[in-house]
Structure formats: structure tokens, C-alpha cells
Length: 226
Ligand SMILES: NC(=O)c1ccc[n+]([C@@H]2O[C@H](COP(=O)([O-])OP(=O)(O)OC[C@H]3O[C@@H](n4cnc5c(N)ncnc54)[C@H](OP(=O)(O)O)[C@@H]3O)[C@@H](O)[C@H]2O)c1
Image (cartoon, rainbow, N blue to C red; front, side, top):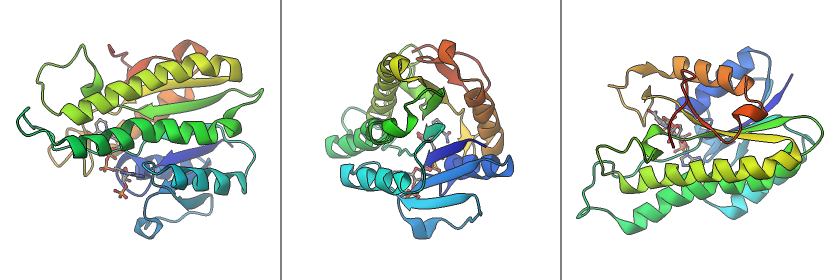
């Protein structure tokens, strides 16, 4: 069965990914910022420390993964953080914005770079970047949320660039919007249960082939504008 790496797997959509994949018989290598916060255990899951904002931590994470396997099938770049959300131009905090960009944009790039050698090979492999409709320039109607929106727009560009580079290495790379999903980030008012969002995302990632690489889909399967 395929081996999946999930970042930010201790809560929210990441934990839901781990649970659904394990129930389907897959192997999960979970990246978690504070391993002690991971309350869920499973024989087919190994938990490793990972702070996607730290190059050292990401390198250590990749080394630990290399010590247990020489290949992975799917990397889900799920870990992410919000900003002050509805901040006006007067309220934007540049330092906080840099951290949001570091976690949400450079984090997935760091992890993809570190695990690229484990994805390369003759067998097709996949990177799924968990983006957001809030990163869509076409869809930006309400403004605000400067750092979060920009971080996901940047992640979408990274998806596109990696998808081009991945053609030489049998790696497809696609961006996904999980919907407004009920998690700590999505909040109580979110209409989409985390289980429904992740079920849709896994279904789409299973269908992720070359023709879908470098594109942006919602968990429902609808394609989204950049
Ligand atoms: N929920 C939604 O409505 C929604 C909508 C669109 C997109 N998304 C995207 O979906 C992804 C998952 O979101 P969620 O709703 O599950 O959020 P969440 O409930 O807030 O969980 C966020 C996860 O990311 C981890 N994380 C944050 N910073 C990290 C870092 N520097 N290194 C490693 N892990 C880190 C958190 O770990 P800690 O426990 O250590 O903080 C946690 O596991 C995110 O990329 C988010 O932007 C969510």
C-alpha cells in the first residue's frame, strides 16, 4: 500500500488525513511540530518532529524519513497558519506576515525540496499542496487577510513551478482548496465537516495524474481559477 507523508498531522485536516488513510490500509509518516501533541496512535503510522518554518527541522525530518524508507508515494503539504485575518491596511503586521509566508509558502517548498529524492523515480509520485480559495487572485472580492491570501497565492505559484520541474522526475504537483472546513482554523461556523473535506481531497489525490498536475481544485472536484 502507498506511503503518505502528511505535514501538520496532529489536528484539523492533517489528523483527518492520517485517520482516513490508515483506515484504508495506507502507511502514514506524520510530521508534527510538537510530537507530544499527537494523541492518536496507529501501528502503520510513525510520528516525526517537523517545524516547516525551520530549514534545520525540515532537513532532520527528511533524514529521519530516509532512515525508515527509500521512497514515498504522496507528500501532502498541509501544515499552515492563519494571520490576523480581517486586518485593514492600517493593521497589517509585517513581522507576523513574514511568519505566515514562511510557514505557508516556503514551508511546503522546503519540505518538497527535502523529500524530492524520495519522490523521484520510475514510479509516478505526487505532491498535494493544501492551498485555499483565499489565495485565488480572481476570487479576491473581500480584500484584507493580506498575509494569508498572499501566502496561498505564492504556494499556488510553487505548485505550478514544481509541476513543470516534476515532469522530468515523474512527480505530479497540484493545489487543493479544502473548502471552509470545520477545524480550529475554519472555526465552528464552517459548513464543511473535516471528514467530508478530506474524503474529497483523498479521492482527488488518488486521481492526480499528469493531466491534473499544475492545476487548482476544490475538494468537490471543481477546478478553481488562479
Ligand atoms: N479549515 C479551513 O477552512 C481551511 C480552508 C482553506 C485552507 N485551509 C488550509 O488547510 C490546511 C490545514 O488547515 P486546518 O484547518 O487543519 O488548520 P488547523 O486546524 O489550524 O491546523 C493547522 C495544522 O498546521 C500545523 N502547523 C502550523 N504551523 C506549523 C509549522 N510551522 N510546522 C509544522 N506544522 C505547523 C499545526 O500544528 P500545531 O498544532 O503545532 O500548531 C496544525 O497541525 C492549512 O494549510 C490551511 O491553510 C483550511
